[in-house]
Image (cartoon, rainbow, N blue to C red):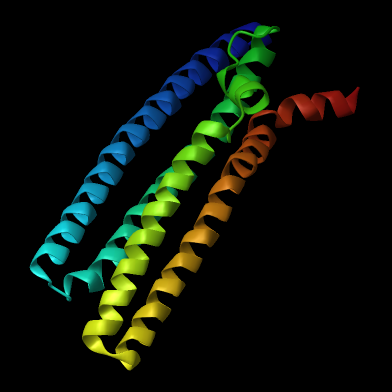
Length: 198
């Protein structure tokens, strides 16, 4: 088969892959929003009920549940960043085969809009405030109800989960660049090889 026929097949395959990635991204975003919203609601209800009824054992679970919600969200956004990086590599390959720019969403997001902006920072600040408030209230209730020794163990569990969350967020932000580099290497390898031969 000749190169034009191969290019057409490649473009069709890449277009299907591009659409699949976009669908995966939308699905993850939708499910993550629902899960995090439900998790925050459950933690809020637990806080209100535990405070009203003076149920100390509820406060054992609130920070763990909240950090679990945030770890879940971090994992999902890690997956989104990987999909975004790979989607950009697919965009670049489609554009290369077309000989012009025909798709550029991920490039626009990365170079113009930015992955981190004032909206993200504001939302993260709110989430951090909720985490600090729930953790502080719960820790003081656990110390008061269960004593120093148990309170220290509980505090260590909270610190461990908080460190895992921080490492997860750090890892999450590297996902886009890693996926982009891998996608470029895999999808653009034949182009780079041809350029090096000339």
